Image (cartoon, helix red, strand yellow):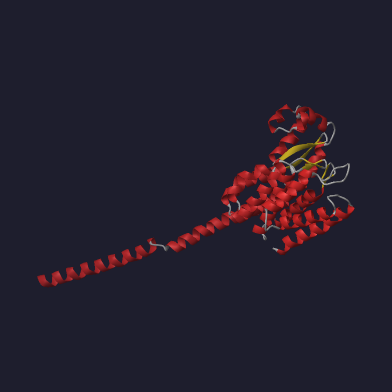
Length: 320
């Protein structure tokens, strides 16, 4: 009888061990969720978060919000997006800035606002630190809004108007792709130090050549860049300035129409220092034409500028 009791006890214990083992196996299966599944869930959460940010951003754009409202949203959210979404936000913001630039300029011309601005910023030198010195409340609010929208004021012939302050975009570079950073770098050169105002060149011929080469290098490196068309437009603008000068900065001596020595030297330097570039090849052809025309800048020579310009643009577009 005792033996039977022992056998029953052993049988019951064996069943308990088996049941316990099965339970542990089931629990183990529940606890050990595949790592891949967790990663996929986290990626989905991140994707949904970015989608929500971009949906909200596009709503702001569609509602025609002012630039200062949009940049506030960008500042709060750009670090939570990828390079693609960050570039889209900056690109769309720039379009809004371009739209509002004329609107704000018109506001600055109302009443005696230009007079007040000239008193606040003597010698035409805009200083955002002096905004508090503007006594007109409405004007102060307007100029503050313009500054918050990443514009700065420049003075041309005694009048202030806003331009996009591309230098202020540097804070976003860490979120952007290389081609977008290159674009902002080129544009900030022009906004920080305009190449020409009032028909006069205000940088050296060599600096203009440097900007010309910089834009070509960008176009060659990023043929499918997000801002390729804008940089191509800027390249063409620089090339025309370099070959023709401006109304108040001609490339020739007004007395005898001979090309200026410093312009000629700059052309030669550009050709020598930038071999294997489209710009150097175009300038080499131009320099040859100048020599054949006995260094006289006249209608015969200037008529060649259009053909050389078109050749340069065509060759850059072929690179796409």
